[in-house]
Length: 381
Ligand code: B12
Ligand code: SF4
Ligand code: SF4
Image (cartoon, rainbow, N blue to C red; front, side, top):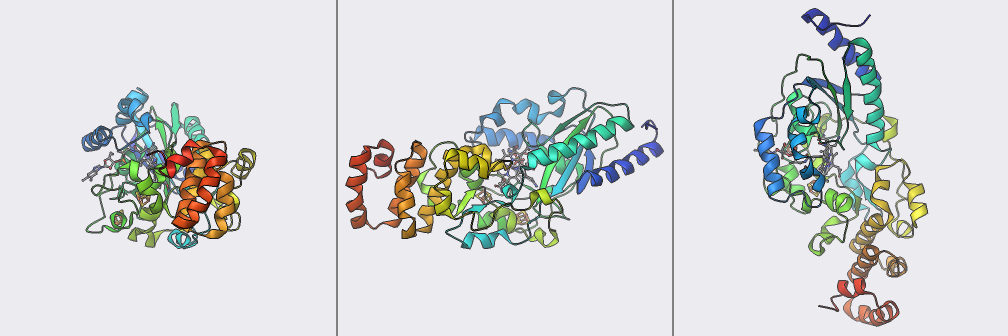
């Protein structure tokens, strides 16, 4: 029997059923809010763009009005149902940074692509809602112009910590977000308040000092941006800070003291599909396009493509400084992609001493006449 939400008692029934159904659909948290972004968040977002902190992510700017105003994205929206799925790891990801010859993939990207998993769950829940109440819905996860973190805080799922991500009392830093926009008004939940206190752990641990101030991120310096969103060569001054992180970064998330409440994810699709042997940096540096696509099919990593991925792997190889990697680097000095050759040129310089470098330099450069490698070795400057 469909619900009518014209009186409180029936609305309470609907809320209870919605919460129950959201659990069946795999969500760990659900709260409801009004379709408005707080004024301060809108101002902070404008400041972020004006300072150029978004770097190459021009899509943040191009749809900024829709991002700042849910009604501009969909004029009929009356309520936003914010949902969270816990993707908590089974161990401390900071430990993986010690395995310098192994590529470190951030926790969110170790399993199946969360966009696909969450979108599917959102659609099932949304369809269920439409069957209960005469309504329309739209579902979003990550890629639409939706300010998910401010909306999640407004709904009460958690608060935006000084690292700018949403922290949950129940799940710490490890929560993916998704939303269902609906044209029915549902009583909103209470906004969550900030519980960071005097803590500055996330700011202090950041390898690239990407936070100019608490709660503000200069994405251009963030390893997550550099290894995932940034398309060209990675600025030289930041390469050594990247360590073995070949896709994303978790340091500011992992250090948060609220993770003492974190729990391992129940969603098996988020379990890591790789073991450390698969992620040997030298082996990864051999992947051609077909092998890359096969290895990362269904994973968010596939999105950045083989060349950007190899660029990251070669930078990590340079940071590991193992002479065993030399043949792998040399092979990549001849790669078809200029960003791969450039990263290989940088990596070899991290491993060979100046006199050793001299010995191979002329040989490699004479054979290749490669502008990218020449530029890396400062020969044309
Ligand atoms: C662009 C983007 C990125 C960019 C920029 C990140 C950023 N912090 O802006 C990059 C590529 C760097 C990135 C990295 C990551 N991302 Co991302 N990303 C997004 C995306 C698409 C948009 C975020 C956005 O609008 N940024 C613009 C800035 C201005 O907004 P903001 O971060 O909310 O900034 C607010 C605060 O800074 C605050 N503020 C500013 N100044 C001040 C001052 C004071 C005093 C106060 C109180 C507040 C305050 O106001 C700002 C506006 O609301 C969202 C999905 C979505 N549609 O929302 C996912 C999303 C934020 N990313 C996510 C994840 C998981 C990550 C990574 C952890 C992935 C990884 N392991 O590598 C890292 C974390 C890095 C970090 N410390 O933020 C999740 C976060 C989930 C959560 N629990 O919060 C999201 C929500 C995707 C999802 N659906 O789950 N991401
Ligand atoms: S994800 Fe890494 S690089 Fe980015 S802000 Fe957090 S600690 Fe810094
Ligand atoms: S590490 Fe500390 S400052 Fe950063 S989000 Fe967690 S509680 Fe807040």
